[in-house]
Image (tube, rainbow, N blue to C red; front, side, top):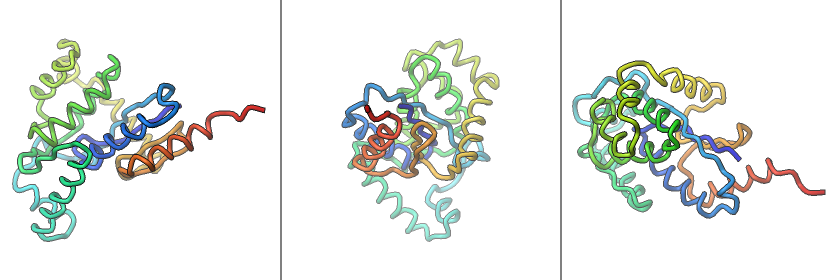
Length: 216
């Protein structure tokens, strides 16, 4: 069974959703027969290299709320993340383009390290205050996982995997995906949102039942 997950590196619910999906998968009876593929999705394709100014003020302007409401929202989601074992540090988070980060995940996929790379990027962004658009930062994070230095440098210096990222996003549009995380099973069954593990486990079981012929 193939599970594709569309998500963005700068999406807090995507990190929470990753943890919840991992819990669900660990409890799935056929987990060893599940292939997981991470798909690219940019919440803001036009994001600059790095945004300036107060994060809460930007959120308040974007969603039409007060700055205090925006800060309260961040405190609430930080608590939700903590319950999943993830430490969010919005006070040091640096926001910018995630396009090159997605390209590095595609490179990691070629080496069987996509999940580890996705995890490392999420940790760097949400907990360590790293700027994910910065090439030196991406190279250092990739090196931690043992990705070939030359391939990483070549990828970041050019357009390698750019088309793969855009293709992921094109497919998302074709499938009607407008919010992340979105979990899609065998291109036949899907759900958007960081649902609780029990709900995601139910999705896995439903997908398995749909893809496995009933013995006569």
